[in-house]
Image (cartoon, rainbow, N blue to C red; front, top):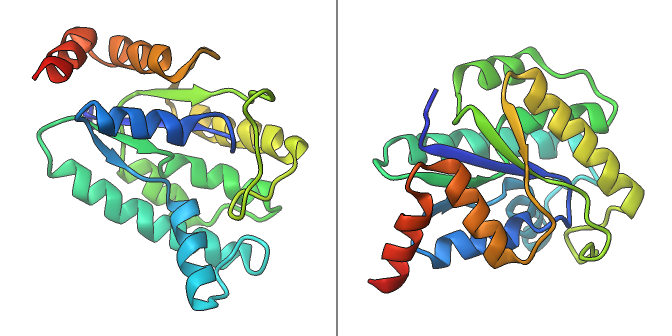
Length: 191
């Protein structure tokens, strides 16, 4: 298990990416969400690996992206915050009504993150759709349920993020991630 690899998970539109961006702005290393980047790339090239065209191919690209991100982060000495990670992929397969492939279970078992996963609960007041996020509110809630279920099944402790402004979420995640998280954040802001 790699204690410096910290995952923020949940359904779409719950503020994960905004929190990741705040962590990056505070000087922390971050790994972006695979799904959104893959959608952007596939749309740009007219590719088939889109959740609304070929969800299984989309899932395989997410697996590849997440493995690459893990290897990049594991070489770093500093903490890295992930916008989703491998264990959530099992939830995605369930969401699309497919059996979770054995190689996905093998990846989830072999590539471990910090034992605590921060989950952003569904938050209707901030939920919005966009070009990449096409899910309805009901689909967003269902995604949250299957993704968090997959992390719990993989043995991670789930820590729910409070529904508060991003600055308070940032303080919460730093406090809960490190013994001196707030001091680090203050030091980085003052530097």
